[in-house]
Length: 227
Image 1: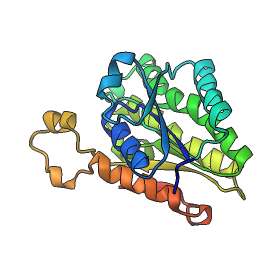
Image 2: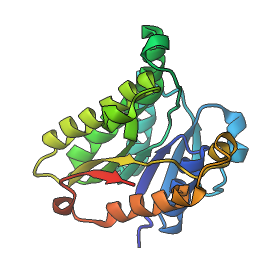
Image 3: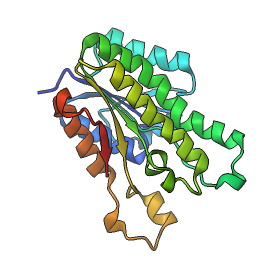
Image 4: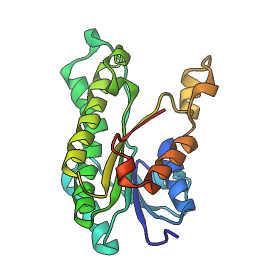
C-alpha cells in the first residue's frame, strides 16, 4: 500500500496531467497538482487531487510550494512535470524572443520545480522525477519547423543527465518521457487525417510512468522512456 506516498504533478489540468494524477490516485498516492489559474480547478478531472494555483515561472513561489509539501509530509516520492507548451516555425521565422518564450514555458517551468524536488529526493535518498521531453528535443532531425520548441525541450535531456550524475549511487532517478503524438481531442482536431492508432493515449503514458516508480534504481540507469 502507498497511502503515505506523495506525488507532485505540475500542469494537472492538462490531458497528460489528469491521466498521471489519476494513475497515482488509483495506487493510493497523495497527489498535489499545480494549476495556473483557479478557474481550471473544476476541469482537473480528479477529485482526490490537492490543487494549488502556482506561477511556475516564479522560482521563489515554486520553491515555497515544494517546501510547504516537505514541511507537511516530510517527503516527495514522485514528481511528474507535465506543464509546458508548443509552437511552430523554422529558422527563418524564429527570433530569439520566440526561443526565450519557449525556454520559459518548457524549461523554466520544469526547472523551478525540479530543482527543489531533486534536492529533497537526494536528502531522503529516494524518489523518481519525470520530465516531459519530445522527439524534436532529442533529435535535431525532428526539429525542422519547430526550432524554438526543440531547443527548449533539448535542455530537459541535459538537465536529466546532470541530475542523474549527481544522484549516482542513490535511490534517485530523473527520467525523461519522450512521447510521439499524444492522443488528445486537441491533436485530433488539428490533425484530422492522421492515423490515431499510432498515437499514445495519456492513460498509456501514465501507466508507464507509474511502472517506472515501482522499478529499482539500478534498473533505470538509461532513464529515457521512448514511445
